Image (tube, rainbow, N blue to C red; front, side):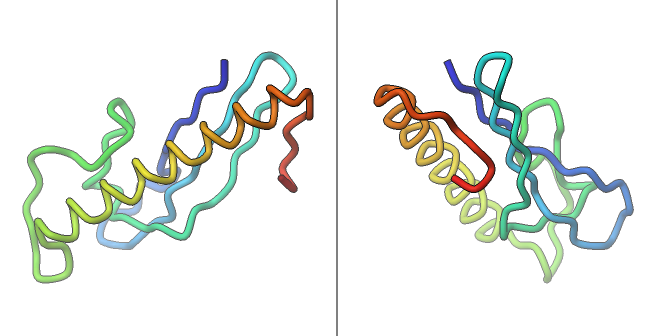
Length: 98
């Protein structure tokens, strides 16, 4: 069974950092790629793999931005899992190029 995790690798506060997607399946597949999404590291929770519940909103990051980004990340995660399951059901391996 494949798992998809989202993570931010930077800890520099006040500067947008890319959100990484990590796909793991079994022992042979462990792929980490940068997504097009960015977030302030102080707003990101590594435990929940999402934007923190209690953050101080600014004019650069509003509640609408939070809900929009959360929805897009969830859609991306579901899409990757769905396509990964289709691919493995056909017996094809998953590579970073995929």
